[in-house]
Length: 365
Image 1: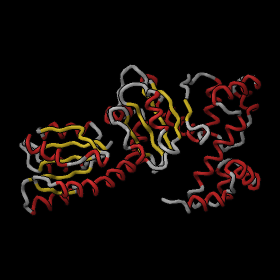
Image 2: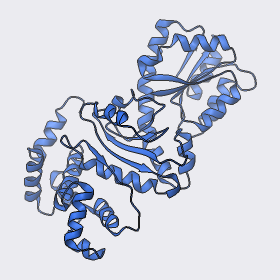
Image 3: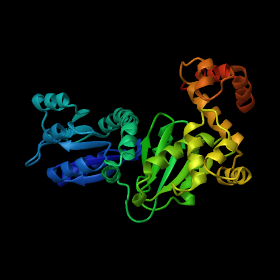
Image 4: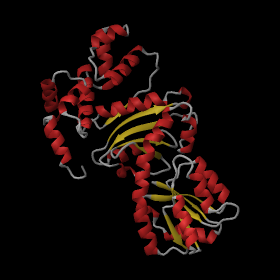
């Protein structure tokens, strides 16, 4: 759900504005409603909001002042000014400062519906634009704690559940309850979900799996370990191992000193290079047969199938670009082009060129 903040110095006007907006119809909800402009500014500085509906004239700090200050910071919400004044100067100032719209009190139902219908696509695009930046802040130890708090993600002693998700459209995730999840959209079809209250339940997992063509990799993160960045990379790689017959992968947390986990981490990061399980086993002082058994038990795949799955899914993603198929073959670790085409057709049932044409011809591509 999109998180909306309302601020107006008049309590009745505040309630009237909220009631006139059919937020739920557009995957929005009122996350904060207050009559104190300074408290509104504090919340906007310390918490993620998708939009803020502000009275243009409030004691001590006007709606325009709030926009002016907030526009200088990262992750700025969309601002809608609501005022009892139709003065053109106020409207001009609000628009010049970057406000999405300027509305007069009291809001009428027809006007409200039209406003939300125009606002929702803007909020979606903001989520897509902010996603990679939020991911970068979460991956940086210097900004990680602050960003987790900004996103409303609990940092208590219990582990945080993180889910890497692939869906036909990230819009499919907007119906998720915001009191359970915070969503970071990485692109149109990829997202990270953070369970904001406690560990993810089977009900949460079933809710996600009910989304058509949803695939996900789930892992847990203990804030005290300081290894969130490692988990996020691991989840996004594991997501490439999912498919129609295996839509869910549980990523098991492990110690960075575990030899096999170091081996597995190398495969995840270097799967486009020439890799041999026998060579890797020797490198990490592991028995080859034992290492082979561990691989199957830990990932659900043999080493060969694990490597192929990663490479094929990486190739499929690159086929959405304009990169020549011959270059894609090398990018994902195949030096022999004809072998790559044969492997791809065996995996997907079509050649890389046929796959590209099929996807480009699909609705929404």
